[in-house]
Length: 254
Image 1 (cartoon, rainbow, N blue to C red):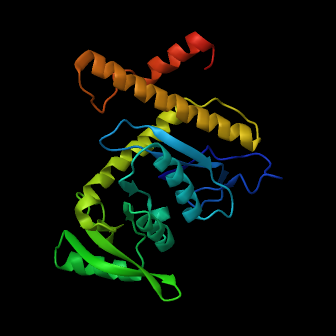
Image 2 (image 1 turned 90 degrees about the vertical axis):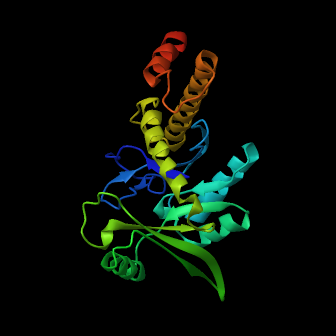
Image 3 (image 1 turned 90 degrees about the horizontal axis):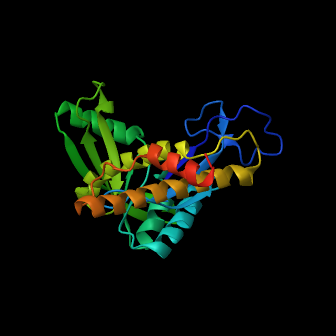
């Protein structure tokens, strides 16, 4: 599960301030934001669902909505998310659904102090249990996994990343699959039609339709690979350019 944003919006936001919201990096720019749930890892990289992100919506609401859609389609095992979803209420909701999760944690004072101790002892990895307060004397139990980055450009506590998981560190290696989401977003945006319209419905339709085209491309590539070689490899044989060219030839769209 992740959130992407459109190109920064430079026009008049009057009447659209609940839809054209701030960027994820907390800059002075504004942009439309879209949330998706995608298959990664040992599966064909498909977008299962997409939804807009509006001002005032909680991350818990977004994750619940996308998981509801995903679980209607497939069997979900493990949920991988970015650090913007590290809320204890999001994690508790996922656990109550019987799912595992891996999410990076934003480093606060205690995590920075622990990372400094690990650096002093030259320790590459460390796990510890943590209870996260939910309110009204309720807690969410998770495991914090500190992992030292290889070839880090930093010489202080920033050498370490902190992850949270309700299944310990066993699923941590799977988190590396998330790069497929960022790669997928770049491809999805290549399928998007250009527009200067501020119409929220039109903007989201263009993004959702691009997600559909992206997923069709990856599904077709799977079928071609299996037909030609009997196996499926991560690198596509059918390229996005091939698909865009064929789409324009057959439909005039593009």
